[in-house]
Image (cartoon, rainbow, N blue to C red; front, side, top):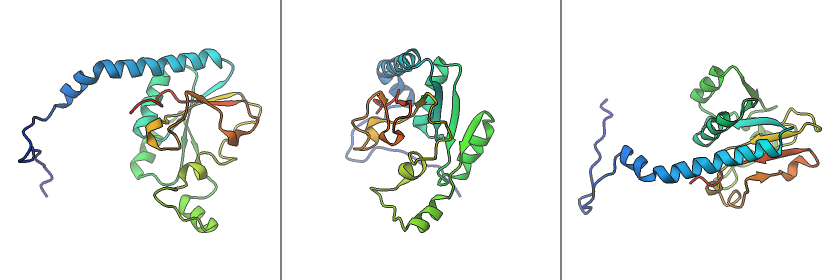
Length: 189
């Protein structure tokens, strides 16, 4: 039952491990620069789209939680939404329920019911999570006339599909709605 581990260099490696604190010190100026850039993007968004509702989508993953922290530092009036993909572990749902001010978007059917109903076969390349639970028409319970700015924790390094994303985007699936997405941490690696 002993779960302790020992980390030691490979016999052929004559190197020293960097401590967490040393890593943070080494990367501090780069981290500060990226943080400032993200905060500037949030400021630009607030200025450019001041009449839009500010909505933050969170998954409770590292990217969305970093993005939420940054947005909260700059904007007072935001709404926070958790998009339930029905694929998360129990601890995610426990965390979401601790935040009474978070809105939860629940799908009409769970992932496994969707897979069975539509004869969909998820693969490593095409999991379907975003297209089924995050981009599908009807997942957003907003009026088509609402002006909305969605803050999302999407990063360019996540996939080839996301590699060319820009700071501000309009999802073609939204049609003529006056909605915009802001991706403040898209350049984070």
